[in-house]
Amino acid sequence: MPINWSSDLDTGIPVIDHQHRRIVDFVNDLEAAQVLGDKKKIKSVIDDCVDYTISHFAFEESMQVEANYPYCKPHKKVHELFARKVAEYQQRIELGDDVAALSVELHNMLCRWLINHIKHDDADYVASVKANMKIETPPPTVEMKQKSWFRRLFG
Image (cartoon, rainbow, N blue to C red):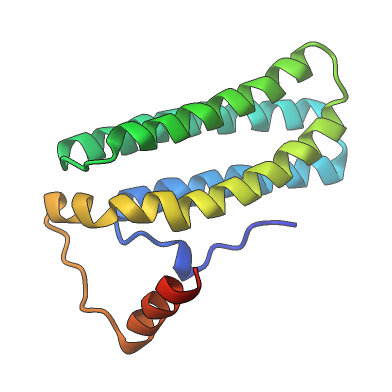
């Protein structure tokens, strides 16, 4: 199933949101290649997605360092673990494992990981980076306050 971008994935940092949307496009391109059964395209999309994501991680991490975000190192570790996991898929494909089957597994993992990462891990650094970039954050709406209150009580 494709990922449909929604406003709850926006960080409010335009350059990051643009990069996240591009990663979502890669994930959706992977699904389209799976539907076509195009193994060469699947491999190409995976490689392109990995390259783009690694550069996105480096950019995001540099923004965090510049903003003195206190959890830069743990965030970077999350990125490194993800990169290692995806590299394992790439290696298995190179070693001759079934590209179609692996791509389905990878696609499912990417969907879950990306949405969770944006909504939780990335959301944690947004205030620091926005303050550093002098991006104004609108005052919270009643709905946002309720969501925050609800989340604190019920996770």
